[in-house]
Amino acid sequence: MGSTAPKRPAAEQIYLDHASTAPLRPEALVAMIAVYGGTWGNASSVHATGRRARALVERARGQVARLLAADPAGVVFTSGGTEANNLAVFGAAGAAPARRHIVVSAIEHHSVLEACLALGRTGYAVTPVPPDGDGRVDPDRVAGALRHDTALAALMLANNEVGTIQPVAAVGRACRAAGIPLLVDAVAAAGRLPLAAGALGAAYLTISAHKLGGPQGVGALYVAPGRGLAPLFHGGAQERRWRPGTENVAAIVGFGVAAELAALELPATAAHLAALAALLTEAVLAADCGALVTGPLDPAARVPGLVSFAFPGMDGDALLVYLDLHGVAAASGAACTSGSVLPSHVLAAMGLPPAACRAALRLTLGRESAPADALRAAEAVVAAARQQAGLGRRPLAPTPQSARSR
Image (cartoon, rainbow, N blue to C red; front, side, top):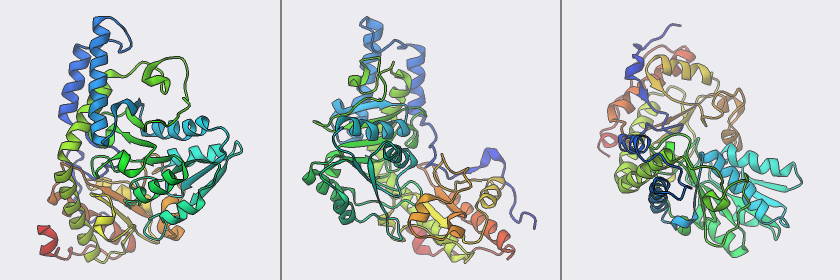
């Protein structure tokens, strides 16, 4: 069957893949260009040019720390969220060599889950904790899995595929009572949910700049006071020797600007994204095109702006291609695995059958998204699903006025 919706020029594409990467904020770009054009020194050098670069790095460290409501001294700049998560997992294990047990949720990002499994191949015992059908991990199950020899527990703040917000604070209290450090992957939550490392009970917390309007290739690991960390790399004194190597000053500056703006705009951004997600979700479900919402239906239980659908029995790759050809950029799951032919490990852990896990769509709106984008995306999703189901094109049912006004 041929396409049933007019194709949209690539230049006019509706971008709904902010969970993979968000557009670089103009303010961050301007700040980065200023670095490249002027303060280009090595932040480790003691001369005036180096000192100016160091001042910019430290200013950005403070901006990132304020987003996390944390001490700037604990902020370690990395090349992104994947490195930050690996540094936390292997660094925490290396700092407590006598402890040989790891507790990790079964729905963590691969940069956490696979790092823990890599430790398992070296003799660590790894206890995965499954979620419920909404993708929520029970804090009591995490607490029950902790042992006297647990080196680290890991639970993300919001799932990057289905958006479920996790009960991190409750897990943090249990870990603190047991004297066990907790890693909180906040990459999918940054800029969309409040981040307060102390209130969450995080010993380690990770974010990535490009998820909130900063440049790609830079992230941060926050290390709480008193927590140890064994470095992955050696050969320099940068970043308290936890992450040696010449700092990427321009990228760090852009990160800092994006973090500061994300903190200032958070309430308005979260409300805007939640309203658009409700509009998109209700339009798709009203069309009765075979879509199932994955994750919680309660908007308050999911990260603002992330919508996830499963289409049992359909071809997920074909859905994505259709959307792309008709002007909607979407994803099937985590950006680093969306090209895989394997079912989503998150959806599988939630109990969805393989036929549903292989046909999932993740649509993530951003601060620049508009209501018209949500409605046009919903129309394209419905058309794609009906094309596969052989139902033909039918008009979308009207979206309830209540959803439009929220």
